[in-house]
Amino acid sequence: MIPVCPVHRLYPIDKHRVPDCFPAGRHRPVLKNRILKYLPVLLLACIPILSGCWGSPSSNNAGTYDIKVIAVDPQNSETVYVGTTGGGIYKSIDGGSSWGTVNIGLSDLKITALAIDWFTPSWIYAGTEDGGLYYSSDSGELWIPSSTTASSPGQISSIRSIVIDRNQCQTPPCKFIYVGSQETGIWQSTDAGLTFKQINENLTDTTVTALAIYPTMIPDPTTRLYAATEGAGLYLRENNKWTEAPGLKQQTQEEVVSMIVNPLLVSELYVGTRGGGEGEASVGGSGVYKSIDFGSAFTFSYNPINKYTIFSVVPAIGPSLTDLTLYAGADGIIKSTDRGAFWCVLPDCLNNIPEILKSGLTALAAATVMQPSTDGNFLNSMFLADSTNPTLFAGLFNQKLIKTTDGGLTWTSLNLQ
Image (cartoon, rainbow, N blue to C red):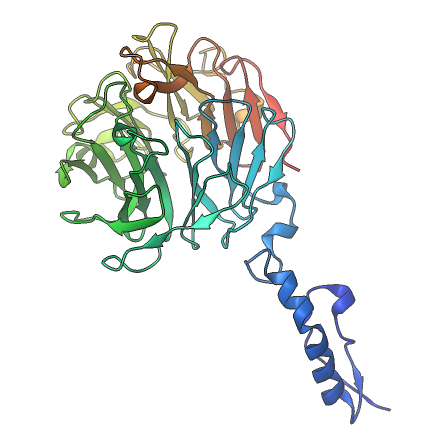
């Protein structure tokens, strides 16, 4: 009998794959019968991963993917979540000593943003590149896709930032959630992530790459929300209205990748940008920028050597509530104790980048401690990094995750496998 070749390999699982060749005259019915026989097996194999049968990311090792975002439980620093560029979300409950995936319910394993509710840390939000936004009410054990309203249909794609409005959190979990998309602008939820609607009115640029909100101890009734865009345009939302804050775009046209508001001063804003531009801020250099007037004007706070580094700015408080220390992922890890006037490279402040950090950072996060509010109300408390000996987690370009418990003096490599 003469074999008829080739037969398309329809089965990604070897033991269920049909032979490459069939006897002449019988190949069509045999192939058809085999396909029908094993079709249920294939469908069952695909359902759990929900991301296609061909080379599913869930079957790869964690080391295959870069680390995109890190989130630490604000009430328990032993619980850490890591979002990757194709392996989904990894979770540790022992400070990074061991890890496991928590991907049930996710249709897209390219994780681009994570946010944890301060007061109900079992409530978590995950943004993806192509699969929309998800929320979990059980610490990541099951992810549920958010939906959009009839007035704002469509999927929230290319998510770059998620912030939770703690100023309107009378009863946990916090209900007001904001999501920044690099394709469709800004989305708002008023029901803890169940549904979202667009709030792009008055925005002239919807390529949103970073969001920030004032994490004050005393609720801010105006809910000042900042939105930064790919071209460094900055917008401020107060009383449900967007206005442009022109200061940043006048200084740089580099992409904004991170943004925080000083927890002790609502008018003070720090922005991290990245890009390949050379020179000072006036000609579009990347680095860290600071504003003391709600974004109306910015000054160049740190000019990095490595123009392609991710600049994730992290605030730390201590030992007293009036002391602010800033950490940022730039040229390794940099630190400022004078609100951005001077930065030094850790660990020795002599601009000597530790070997382990030289590949550059992809993500940076700090473990937090609760700062009780002056009025004794738990919902008005802050959860911020302690600057005495902060615990920092950093993702590197070589697909590694590292940790320091002494503010960057020494580092430990963590294994996501």
